[in-house]
Structures are given as C-alpha cells and as structure tokens.
Length: 288
Image (cartoon, rainbow, N blue to C red; front, side):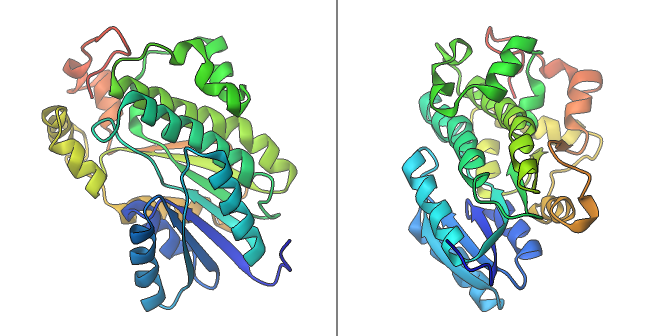
C-alpha cells in the first residue's frame, strides 16, 4: 500500500486527448502514463518530463484483467490515486469486431472496476467514450441494464454482443456500454468518496481520427464536419478543458454523467442536415 505522501494521476492511453487531459490535471502530481506500446508511453513521458512533470511510463493491455490489476498496483504503490483517465481504445477502422469488444467494452469495464477499488477519497475518473454511442437506435431497458451491471467476466457472453459483423456496430455498442458502466460504477466510486464521468467527443483531430477520415467511412465523416452546426472538427485541448473541469473541485456535484461534445453533429444527425446519414444496415441504424 502507498504512504499517501504523493498524489497520482493515471493516464491510460498515451494519445493526444489523454495527454491534453493529463497536462491539465497532472501538475504537482505523479503522472503514470500507460499504453499498450512502450514506445508510445515513453515518448509521451519524455514530453511530460521536459515540461516539468513527475512521470512514470509503463505498459498496459486493457484487454487483459491481470495487466490492468498490475497497473493499479503500480499506481497505488506510488501514492494516493486521485485521478484516472481512460483514453485508450481502438476504432472501427483499426481492429476487427472481437478486438473492439475486448478492448473498448470489456477493457473499460475492468478499468472502472479495478481502479474503483483504489481510487482515493476526493478522486475522480474520466472515460473517453464517443459520439458514436449516441447514434444507436434505443436499446431496451433490459439491454441497458445488462450492459451496465453484468459482471465484467460475463459481459462478452451477452446475447446482444453475439454475431456482430460490423466493426462500427461493435464500436457503437462498446461506447454505449462505456457510458452505462460509468453510470453504474459511479455508485461504487461514490462509496469511496470519488466521482466518475464520461466524455463522448465527436471528431477530434488525432492520429486515430485521421485513420477514420481516410478509412471506408471517411466520406461520411467529412460530410459530418461540413454540415454540423460547429462546421469543424474539435481539438484535444477542448476535450482537455472539459475533463479538467469535471475532475476539479468545481464539479463536486457531477458524477455518473456523460458529456457529448461533437459540435452539434449528433443533434444534426437526429434532427438536422445530417439526417440523410441514417441509413439502416441491419445492425444499428447509421453508417457513421
């Protein structure tokens, strides 16, 4: 166990959005940067070290419970874990269905469970979800409850997660599950005096987003940017600003919530100029 002499912030996923958040909440704290790629974690750590942060780089495979448990133990050994940011994941153009479900859905659920056991009083967590979870046809009350509360080791066995042939549908279900798990797990985090929220960004210009813009759904994403009310993509710093507020003392009454920040793209998708994108595919009701 730690001696509580230092506050720790854990960043899972060393990409642009996660780094933007950690820069805002990591000052004066020990920042642990964990990524599947050691090279990525160490590259991010060098940036933080050069900017005056205390930082440790390590690896984690969020598709593996033992790997997540080991990361939680490391963070807890370094001090009082006051912040957890899960910005790791794979997109529909980067991985097959099984990998998306194992990483984005199961992995996030395990992170919330394991870090919920060690998060310190006054601490807070952020899960980076996606606008994509807001584009599903409504699930039933029973399906929502199953995604929110099924024991983590049984999640991937749920009937609604079987026979998925579209990577986009797997991604959308994963992101819907993320938000539902945040709502359910915030109850457990609250028993420790900690808070937990999700952010569902739209298209934020990162290497992952650029993969999608160049991928098979790129035309739809470019149309989304052109026709959404904001008329542009977002930036990692904008997500960082929101996350920093949610993790601050000014947001003490906010927990279990999801914040959609997509320049109005989802609003336009359901009610405005982007409604034409709602072409059913038999799994979900959208092609973006």
